[in-house]
Image (tube, rainbow, N blue to C red):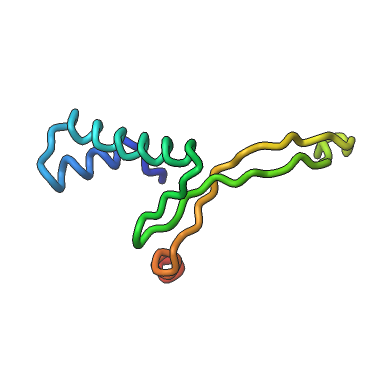
Length: 95
């Protein structure tokens, strides 16, 4: 099962009695703030959940897995998430 924005908005609506439109706006605002912070090079720390940050990866030589031919993998920025210790414990305890 996958949790979507709709599922998160529905949970907000059900728990706090928000209208559907207000719940969707809140979810959009939260994700927009996280995204904008990351774009500006800031880390996003959510207590009890984890930290999001952008990593810069240098260019490197890789291989085409189908043909085995070497290829250059360009430098890029990627989003990274590191869960906090308490979140990792919750996940590992609920296998």
